Every structure is written in structure tokens, then in C-alpha cells.
Length: 314
Image (cartoon, rainbow, N blue to C red; front, side, top):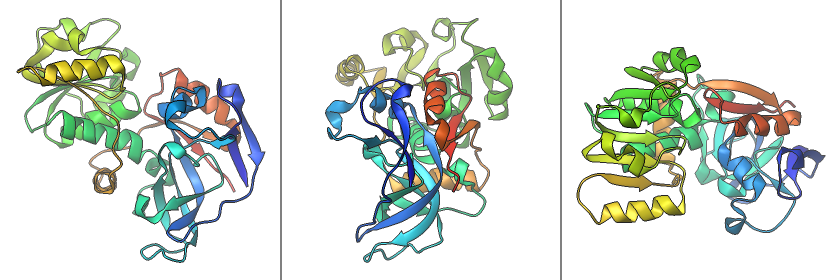
């Protein structure tokens, strides 16, 4: 099978297309014929070597932590899935989705509704669940709250704006002027051009500052947080960890960073929002597998409107 692999850490140029053996599913795994795989910032952070302390040392590596396709084969102990089903699967940091086929645990594979495309499905876990968990678990969002989403037109941001609205919040979106029409279509109540207005200097106060791009710190956003407001940052870092510890020990405003926690119930909640048209998946560009390096280069500009998806043709 064809796969996009890396044999060392580096820039997009280290990605090559190779012919490698097709994986064989274990007893509790399924073999999936991949149709679409999502590009996430964590993919190119792994490619650069930023997360090598968390990963095994072996090369070549196949990146790609979330993908969708059709079950080609099931392991002997798989009970709830069968050949021919349209599915989504998550792989975590071990990757494997940048290929024509991949294996996935039955426990991390979910059957897709007919009205969700492979391209849409491939974006649900990382961007969709990050937005949901960040707003609900960390931000403690409730109906009627004032929420501001920084980076509202990106992959996580487009999900966050919509999920916040579904959960009953009043949403202010921060993005560039060229993306105003997009975020307005997602339901944003107020839109701010970050090039013209520094939202941290506004008189408005918010219950949640959801930073989907990580460019602002808790201390920069402190003055626009309500007295018990929560700053949520989806880009973990040591300074963020220290700030979170400090604010945890003191009353008032809180700083919270987090890493996505795989949860099949949360995944199904996001999937149901998509299937019932409560939210829509925004896909900026699609690339073929052979153009994976270009997909990474585009993702690294951090200017994508919504998600970037690689479509695998067989």
C-alpha cells in the first residue's frame, strides 16, 4: 500500500510517499480502507520532533491521528463492527492515518451516519472534541454566558464558535476581516478583526476566553475576564501550566490549559451535532495523499479557514 512516511524529523520535505506492507489487524482491531485523513497541528509538531520525548524512537513513522473509511477486515475478537461499514477511527500520537490502510482498535472506532461524509468525519475528534472539552470541561460553559473565541476561523475555532452557540452562549469571534462572512455564518453574535482591534483592551467582560491559537496569555486577557471568568488555552506549555497552578490556588479568575482526552461519548456527541445539522464542518482545502508535504506546509501557515483534509484515492 502507499503511505506518507517520515524517516527523520524535519520540515515538510522529509515526508515521502512509499510502498509498504499493508497492516494486519489484531484480535480486537479492524483494518480500515482509508478515504480521508485530517491534518492537525500536532501532526507537523510530531514531524518536527517537538514531541519526540513522548513517542517511540523508531523510524519510519506514519503520521495521522484521525481518519475515516470503510472496514476491510475484522479481527477474531471484534464483536460490534463488520466488514463494509463506514467508520471513523482515532489513533492517538502513534499515528498511522497517512496511508491507504490502517488498523484501529474496535474501542476507538465508531460507525458513521450516512449523512456525514468521509471528509467531514475525519475532522471530528481533534478539532471537534477539543472545542467541546475545552468549553464544557474546562470553561464550565452554561447557557447565557459571554464567550470570546480567539482564532475563530481555524479548525478548532470554527467548531468552538458553533458548539458554544449550541450550548446557549453569546459568542464573540476574533479573526481577520476576510473571515467575517464565514464566522457570521457559524452564528457568531459579534465579530472582531484582530488586526484592527485588540480584544484584550475592550471594556466588555467575558465568562470564558477560549484561545484556539494560543497567541494570548492569561495575564494579557485578565482584564476582559469576569471576576470568576476562565481563560482556556488549547496549546499546552510550561508557562501555561505554572499560571494554571497559581490561579488554582487563588480565588477569582482561572487559567486552564489542557490536552485532548480521547472519549468516545464526546466523539459521538460531536458527531450527533454534525448529523443533526446543529453544526457544520468547515473544510478549507483537500489534498491527495501524494501532496501530503504541501498539506503540511499549508497547515503550518496557520491561516486555514477551518480544516485541511487529505483524500485517499484507491
